[in-house]
Length: 223
Image (spheres, rainbow, N blue to C red):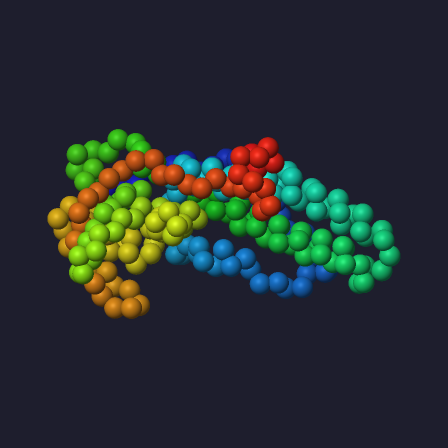
């Protein structure tokens, strides 16, 4: 039931060394991206993620580095030559946007570097095939008899619309290592509840692909 180790990403390592923040005299101390706060990893843990989830992060990182940041940098350079910077809306907005992009790049670079890829579609041994671990899709019954199903994924790919829950969530922790027929106790802020495991399955996890804001899915700019 232990998750396999994976060699550290050389590409991500090079990227993390190459990308360092330069001092910014215009930094207004903006708050961190709420997406980053919502997906904080427990100290000392790996960033477990599915292949599709890692690809999504890499696609976003590539877009920011090679399309979004160069375009915003060009606007800032143009706006810098248009008079008083303190009253130049294009310049001020561009600088704020650059800080947002750079913060996101640093975050994604760290997360890709920490990524520990686990492919739920790979064959499992007889001992763990029916047991709940990362990547499992679990169908369970609540105390009221309602049946629900969730898939356990990485913190960077949880998606409530798809019923994909983070492996560090209370529900995922309660389900982990259980088998069909087991009853587990979910301890959540709202109280405790007994859940009966009905089915455990493994397969490829469908993660929503990265699409730049304002771009329709499948457009040339989103690839």
